[in-house]
Length: 409
Ligand code: GAL
Image 1 (cartoon, rainbow, N blue to C red):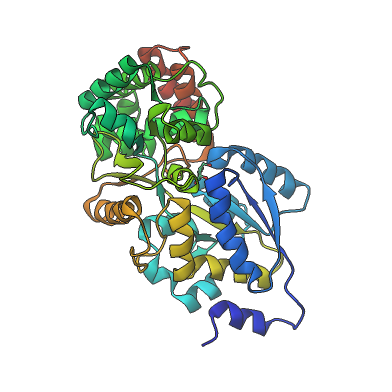
Image 2 (image 1 turned 90 degrees about the vertical axis):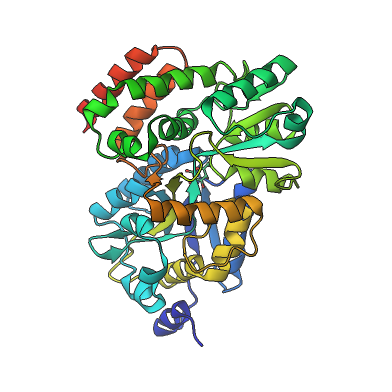
């Protein structure tokens, strides 16, 4: 049977489809390996790949470059995007309408509701979700933990005790990269652990000033300060994948990072449960702060370009969703993909997502643009990072967070 993309391609003229130009921020070893799965898939269909990488987790730099490209009238064919950034571009009318393809392939039935909220705008599919990541993970070097007699901590107090033990051994307890988006990534997990999902949604989604200014928020900042006291002296500006390398090499015990970190461990030939452990940030078991990388296609005219349709169809194919996410560290953006090919962390990720969605414990990652729009997110980044770097005490950070929201709301 002809795939929907092939049908769309056949419906067009007989000319060869052009290259796709893809703007993305997947530049680490593990990310590049995952992206290759997509490149090869398209190349096997005779579609060339023009790479437009803009490094920087969370896509902040990529979004700046995108704005410049669009302003100069030269948007890329396809762009990796997160959450509210998709909504913003759709609102500007810049994105292609994928409804014909989505309808032919039945995307409505297989993409989780929480993702559709971002993939669709005004009833139209405007982006194809390639994965679901989550930020409330801890990655640990198993040999280091075994040597020090540390079991994966379940609670905040157990976590602090474990950090203390590692520090006393002379190793780095927490591998962290001092970049605003990385601090915000840790903050996602800390807020969820400290306040629970209802509080999390109140502060990050509803922007409720009382919750933002509460003692619970102060406690979350106090915990960030504790975390800060267990990072090494050279953390400032470090890229996240170099922090992963510290855990991979056994120089550090833990990294708090989204599950793209697993892509780095795998890319270094490491196996879960043997070389490294993955567990939910203490106090967040059963809960998930999610984000989904999606590819938005920029409108090139009234119809979706042939190569754009092929890209979207390739991304949504169940086989591709399995092959790609096994390498990327994320889980499929479709509910009908088997977990068979996934390792222990991937299987846990798939099960956690399903359970969290069913129990009201699935929340959008603030750090990765799935809780509030870029203006608010960036204002929150500034406060979180200033506090992490000792510019604000916790009380001031709480006040500044309330101010940041008031000004940018
Ligand atoms: C996220 C993205 C992930 C990963 C990470 C670090 O925003 O969703 O796939 O790439 O940044 O670069």
